[in-house]
Image 1 (cartoon, rainbow, N blue to C red):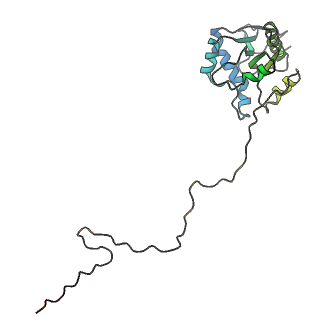
Image 2: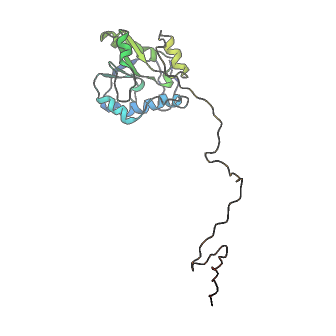
Image 3: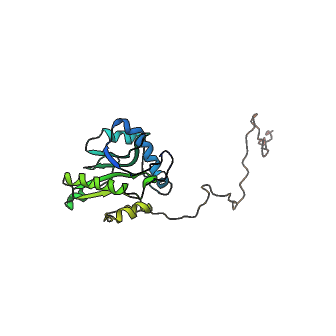
Length: 224
């Protein structure tokens, strides 16, 4: 069946077969461009910046141990087309990760952390996301994990509907809250003084008063 064309994706005619493989260094640049395309619309609607956070961080992930990066592609005469990407970690990773490991330990959970799950907009609703998730669950079972754990923006309705339809439930959440306040200038307006200031003499350059005149002291008359 034909797939609707989107920017940077050619039309695929006939049966569509999606294959999965681990990412290679030569794939990094085009995968980065793929992620920007997928999350471009989401990032315009969310308070917290979603993915990709930065290209530097994305390149660092490739060098880290314990992280799986998977590409999902559709064959095409002009070259395979990236239609999905998955990134998952077997332990909490990254220096900027605020996740509390004790939360899972206290509940005897052995999670596989899904850091990224992305499907190309032109291929959504055709089973790609389901295949990506099945592949992640397969890896989790092989490693003895008991849960898949991921983060999704609360107003990313498409993603929430996808995960809830596959039995994901709300684990915990940081809720962004806001309160509107009256806006005022940071500098106060002019204020009228209650009393007039007293005159203060100002010395001139020759020592004479340039303000109020100063009378010389009177000499006493000489005694005869």
